[in-house]
Structure formats: C-alpha cells, structure tokens
Image (cartoon, rainbow, N blue to C red; front, side, top):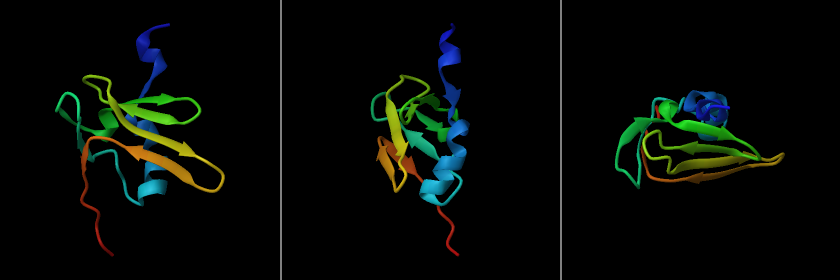
Length: 88
C-alpha cells in the first residue's frame, strides 16, 4: 500500500468542520508551529481512525484532532489559524 492511500486531503473533513465551527473552513490558512509554512486547511493531510487528525502537508506536524462523540465534539487545534467569520 502506498503512503498516499493512508490519507485524504483536508477537504474530506469539510462537513464536520462546518458542524463544529459554523463556517466553511477548508480555505482557512494555518501556520504550522513546527515548520512555519502556511497552507489552507483543505491541503492538509487527513488521517481517519478513532477520531480525525489533520497534519501539516509540509512536515506532518499535528494541526487538529477532532472526535465526534454522541453528545459533543472534542477538538484540539494547533498552530496559528486565521479566520474571518461573517456576522449575520
């Protein structure tokens, strides 16, 4: 199995991110705390298991961990995320 087969791009998490943050998040840019590069969330690598994990596409460092439980979402965000959320 190739390494590519082990992950999806961050766009695969789009629906859950809207559910948690209330806005479309795949275009949000994130600066990695390890390598310093900036990438859109949609370009991050998504690994799925007991929860979902986003990793920096450059160095592989942790960007986000999220688990959907029956009564809540558990979310850990790393690095610098810059968001502009429209007001109603």
